[in-house]
Length: 262
Image: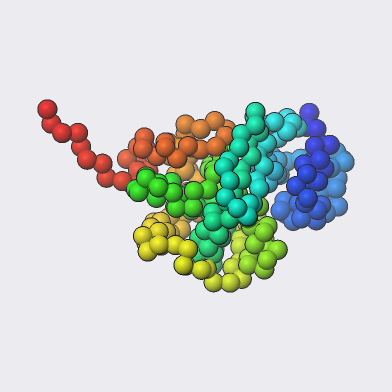
């Protein structure tokens, strides 16, 4: 049986209001309050959304436990990632935060107005931009951390950075419908600063957007499910960038030289 008391505890640990969480779930605040009180059963969709928001694996979340939590800290100075037991503390250096923001704003300025481009599609665009660049050039573009969940790779830092951008008036979150399905979209409130991106990085992003941005959420999620980094990760765990070098031809973006003949 789901432990509904965990809902309030997790929300307060992340300093989220009931109104904010309700908005993310697409329900009213009174309806959300019923969830926290255990007066209404949580749906699978709601549980999946909340597990992503709180950085908890879906399996642990539906069991009402807080194991394998992921904490995201936006740092002002660069520092290393620290691991403590089962918990993962992601410290995001300011340089990476700046790059994440500008790449996100660039994506939104280029394809954000497309009807199919909601939160799920943006997650996967960021994933393929990051992992494809690593396969091609053996170095990171954004270098975001991604976890494996039911819908595919999810950037751990996304919620925290978007919340920071909203507070600074750089982005706006809106709710919409796409073929009768609830959709979260993001509106850029300023133009991206392209000075933090090299010409090679911009060319790569443009190529990825041209290749993938017309896919709907199901199509791009299915593609990510066939990618080796997602396949080889455990549910709720972080994806390994090095796994791109074991990709199948379907998802590989790099041409490898054939082994020389004996």
